[in-house]
Length: 178
Picture 1 (cartoon, one colour):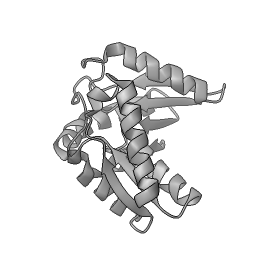
Picture 2 (cartoon, helix red, strand yellow):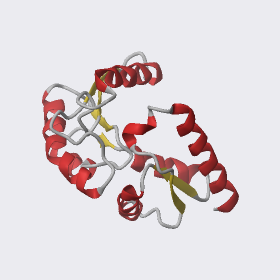
Picture 3 (cartoon, one colour):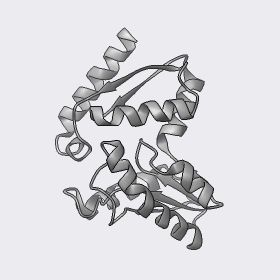
Picture 4 (tube, helix red, strand yellow):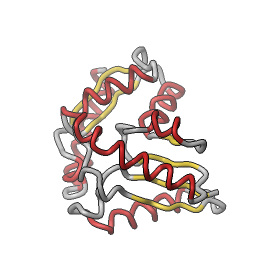
């Protein structure tokens, strides 16, 4: 099986560079079954990060081109590497292979494991995207809250210690308060 992990932004053109593509591929290869071949692509024409509905809109057209290219290249599935699931729904209609997003799959997994879940996201500009996804997947009754950590996508990897601390703090608050 061939799996494409498609990052819907211009990762190689950003501060993390091509090393981020390699880092993610190594992680995915460790998690994947030995019979699964994983490739990681980004979008040279996409935004550097997706932190607003505008960024999301900018990435969809080039993402659709890459999904069609993936199907023609013999990939069996595409996993979109952004929790906003940009273009997942329309891409799934454009090709015959599965196109999955981490928000969609995480929502359903969280609902199976518990009675409520909280979304931890990067910046306030992403909140409308999360609200729309929750509604699209009819997960409103399971959503406890959406919490913003106040760190942009590109800054997450710059200070991993701070990122982990803020995520842990917000996650703990969600457990206690939500």
